[in-house]
Image (tube, rainbow over all chains, first blue to last red; front, side, top):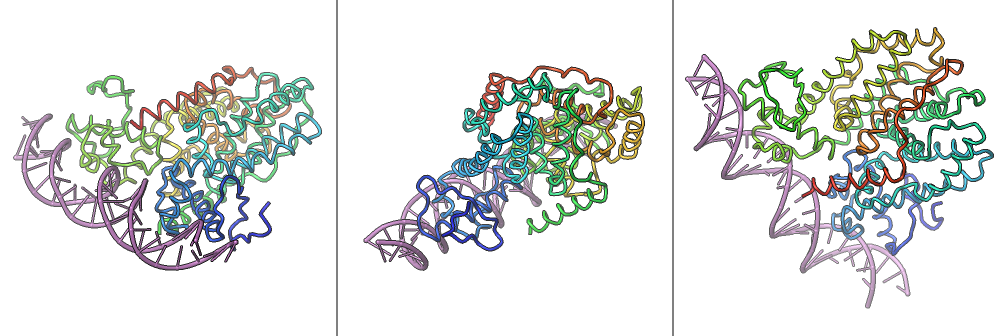
Length: 238
Length: 238
DNA sequence: ATTATCTATAGATCTATAGATAATGC
DNA sequence: ATTATCTATAGATCTATAGATAATGC
């Protein structure tokens, strides 16, 4: 997904930055923009959407004016991060459509969306802010009709319990996705938790459920997680 | 739980403020402290633990110096909010112990803890910060052994699936509790979502599950929720 | 008399921009 | 030549405190 003509900086996860509307054209400009986006994600994940713009620029090793040139306002920055994330999400649609059964499609849907949320802890604050900026723009809005029909079909074929609806699914996925904000140790658990949720969604007389993926987080792991968090926070505060 | 000699201000939910270690003694001082705590909760819920101390004081209609007199440092404030919340949580223990079966006890545990989290959207940021300040202090630490034994008993009597453990439960509850940060409309949904999670936790051959509480959030409700959020945000920004 | 609050203020940090300087690509 | 970055800066807001003023309770 990364353009082959552009080499991502070392150590930086390849950004699938959509070069959509009026992207900066100079090479250094694009690089700086990517750096800004990376540090914006990191700092928003840590401090929420109110994160200091100056610090975002500082961490990107770029002057503040460069940030303002790329993103005229804070909300503009947020909106851009939202659009970038959304582009990734939409790639999922095809995968859902090719699932063999309605139930499998729902599993893919919940898994991919949860994964998307967990992978980027800056998303929850960004989504909240976007909901305020533009209530009509819901992240999965494009899926709505599609999911609703999946839900109906999965109920009909007896795999999905009948007393839930598509919005329940969306809320549940959001819930699981929130694990990304609780530190890496918890984030690694999301498949287990989602699996439990899916079992709760299965019709009571549906076929036997699969084994939970992964292993439970024991107290030792837990401590390691939290300590890891602390160390990271200390490093960041330096 | 409110001291009968102290009249809470009108419109303000009775604060069960523990007057523990060296509480301010003068009447006006206690009132101001309560006001500070209320606006700290509101602003931390909105802006995270980095919320402006000056604004907290302003919203409490009190000078900044009064805030600093009560809470010498930001972390001191956070720690106090944590302790206050924790005190409420511990009141739950008795209720868990009187549940008739291990499964019922687990239901009460998850319900009460989730309710506690949902009721106060300032808690997630506060808990995260506390985990950094003091990794040993986990909110439900006091329950650990107790819950572990409940889990063991519920597995033995065939109501709880065997491939989960106590930490899974804690993670799931945290997840459900995160719904409190998504606006009032979502927050009202937590019982439904928890009920689905509990069904996922039930052993596959356990007795039939109950009907989901409440009704699903339809798209109209959803819109209303988000618009409500927007209006609130606008008011707050004024 | 004691205890607490408030006003005022120093110094730091933030947002936002103007004007001077540097890098790119034709 | 064009496009982008950087430095510097104005004005606002923040944290934290010192010193003057006001409210409580014995």
